[in-house]
Length: 142
Image (cartoon, rainbow, N blue to C red):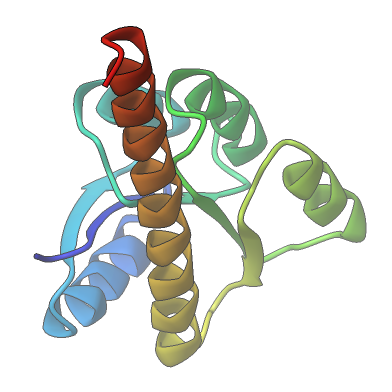
């Protein structure tokens, strides 16, 4: 099954090129051009990995990260920026970002980060499913 990725960046040409590169590597990619749209898509679709540009107008990637973590706390979020600062990186990681990458990012490095984030998400999902099964079995006395 393909990894479902949401890409959010206000630079349309950049994001479309990146989406094509990821799709060529057999990922399912949805693109949006704002933090607001990223939040709305995260509410509707269960993505495996979300990638947010930090510097977007109106709702920044950091603010979108905060909202997405409220909606989907276990979905890994990667932050991208062309103007990274240590402060942004620290703030993003404190808020639960999986990782932080500079633009333009090496496609292979990004693929590697997406794969690691996806593995982590599925491990968390499996532990939750197992805990739910164990709880059902306990409550029924099995």
